Image (cartoon, rainbow, N blue to C red; front, side, top):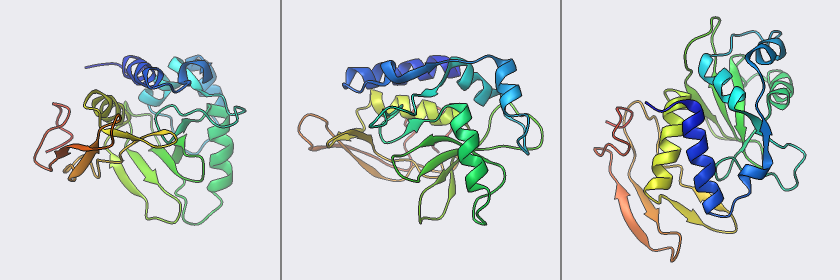
Length: 206
């Protein structure tokens, strides 16, 4: 099983090959002690997988204009920025207190870690899209990163003005929905991922 750092390095390598300037935008990682200190005031515990993510890199540069994606469509928020965003959003009644924003679109869409009162090894990832019902899209951060790597490897993305990964997996713990993949070079459909197909060779799609 690949580590968080190994999966993230694969994602960055794919992004770089597609011309996305992700490597240049990444901030240096921070220590486990610094993660603990920064998150000590939060009403939940940070899972080990999320700590490992911030040790690898502390997000992409928030001052960059336009924002540079960590994976197509979403930037990786630095920890300090995530805490500030959380402190603002938790005031709204439809934001759950245990949602820690990690990845953010150019607007108000987030992928959040659903944290708990005690530090777990990993955490479910919730898709919180503006004006749409939130749902748990991935059973863990590791699975989310594995899906992103698998999408790149199978060329399941399309090119517009920016490269955007298809949001091809809903409720990963249950089934993969049918999705048409589009070839980056000519925009013709090349394959369909059916609900019965195990995309990554892991148990998330069944």
